[in-house]
Length: 399
RNA sequence: GCGUCGGUCGGAUAGCGGCUAUUCCAGGAGACUGUAAAUCUCCGGCCCUUUGGGCAUCACUGGUUCGAGUCCAGUCCGGCGCA
Image: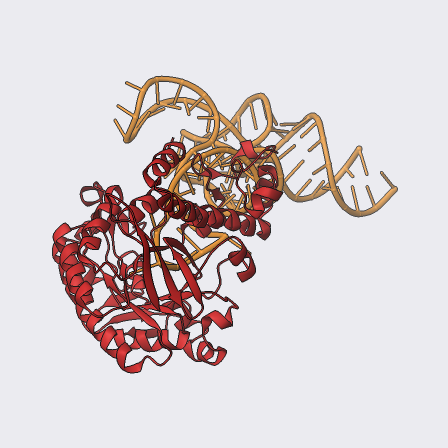
C-alpha cells in the first residue's frame, strides 16, 4: 500500500490524495462502503461499483463466526469470495467489544451528547463489570466474545485478530482495539486507551512477523471525548510503524471533528487516516476539513433498509403518507440509478409492500448520495472552493 | 320456521363475574454513525392545564349482582345444521 498527497487544503488540515493498493487506487478523501459479512447488504458488487464506491470494508468478528476463516482462506480471501474487484478493508473486531459489550441491549450509540451523563443510569456502569447477559467482555489479554449466532464462547487477542484478518485477506486491516462507550468515565477511557496501545504494539509486532500477502495495517487512536487522551493516544499510536491510522471510539455528537483535529495534529502527515464508523454529511465535511482521508459508516445502507433516504434538503422517510402519490423526484437532479428511473411513489409502494427491491433501490441512492458527496467535496478542494461548497451544502441539508 | 354457535379499535384475535380490555396485522410518526438491524421506539374513544387525572366503551334494550365484555331475557345481525 502506498499513500500520496496531491493537494493540501489552505487554512485547514484537509488534503486530497491517493491510496494505492494491489487491487486498485482509492482517490481520497473517500467514503468506504461497509460490507460486514462480505456483502454490502441488498446490493450486488456490480451495483456497489457502478454507484461509484471505490472500496469495501468487512468485519473480522462476523466473518470469523460465519462462514469462518478457513473457508475464506480457501476462497482466496473475502474480496474474491464476494467478487469485489477493488480495494478492501477489514475492521478488527474491536468495535464489537462495545456493540456486544457495554452497548448490548441498550439504546447506547457510540456518539454521545452532552446530556448523557446526567440522564443515563448507564453512566455509572463500569464496563469491566459487564453483566453476564452481554456478549463481549474485555480483559487485559483480549476480548471474550459469545457468538451472536449460537452463543458459543470465543476469545480474541490482538494476535488472533491479525491471524484472522490475514486469512480474510483485505488490503488494509486494523489493529485490535477496544471501542469504548461515551458513557464510560474518564478513568475507564484512560484505562481502555492504555490497553488499546498495548494491543496496538502486539498487533503490529505479530503482523510484521506473519504478514505474507503484503497487507497493510492501520493502528487505531482512542481516547473518547477527552482532548488530553486523544492527543496522548495519537502521539503514541502515531509513533508506531503503522501503514496508516484509524480514529475510533466514542465521540461527542457536537464536536466529532474537533476531536479529529486534535488527533490529526499529532499523527504523521504522510500516512492515511481513516475515521471509523462516521458518515453523517456534516461529519464528512468536518472530518475532511480536519484531515481525514477515508470514512466508513453503516448509516447509508442501514437507514436505506429502514426507509430513510438522503436528499439535498435533509433526510426523508419514504414511508410517510405523503409519498404514496408523489410522482416527482426523490432528490432533485440526483443522477443515481434509483433517482433516474423511479419516483417516490414507487419506492413508497415497495416499502409498504415489503418488497426487497425497495431496500436495494434505497441503498443504491443513499450510498450514491454519500459516496458522491465525498467526491464532490474532493473536487471542491481541488477547485479551491471547499468552504463555499460546505456552506451551501450544509445550509440546504440542515435547513 | 326450529335448533345451534357467534357479534370486542380498520381487519383478525384474547378475555369466560373483579377493577388500566390482550396480542398480531393494517394505519400515523420517529430513531438509526467501525451492522445482533429488511430493525427498534412511540401514537391511535372523549375531556382536562402537566407529572397525572376524569369520563366512556365490548351489536342494541332491559335485568341479576357490591361489581357485567363476561351471567339471564328480549331485539337486531351473521355462520352452520334441520325442515
